[in-house]
Length: 143
Image 1 (cartoon, one colour):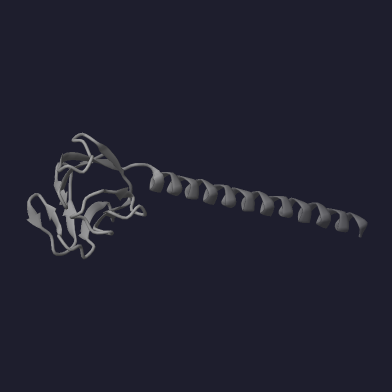
Image 2: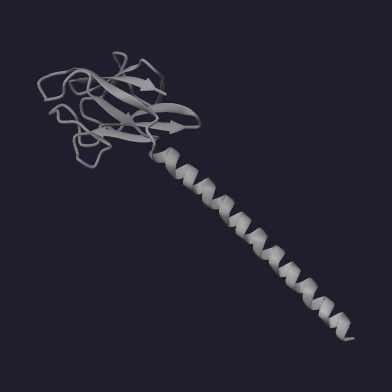
């Protein structure tokens, strides 16, 4: 009888160790996935390069990092704050959705243009597109 109880203790101890090892492995895998997700969200996915600006202090060639959710506007809370009297506080957003980049006008007074055409709804953008907000023209360069 004592041998059976001792055997059950050993088996339960081994099962407990296997359970703890599996739990640790699953937590480690989740931690790695979350850290990868965070690093991709904060890593620049491309750039917006100023190609034209009218007397607002921005020099052509100035580069802004593009994140999966990038907001453009006059307010300092935007990802890319732009000083221009013709730009709204929250003017436009560039968003990565399902592997594609989308440009949205946020109801700005003077509108947002893509390659010289005013946008009225969400549009897909790609490398080389020119985004105009206020009197600033930005060239989109994706990685």
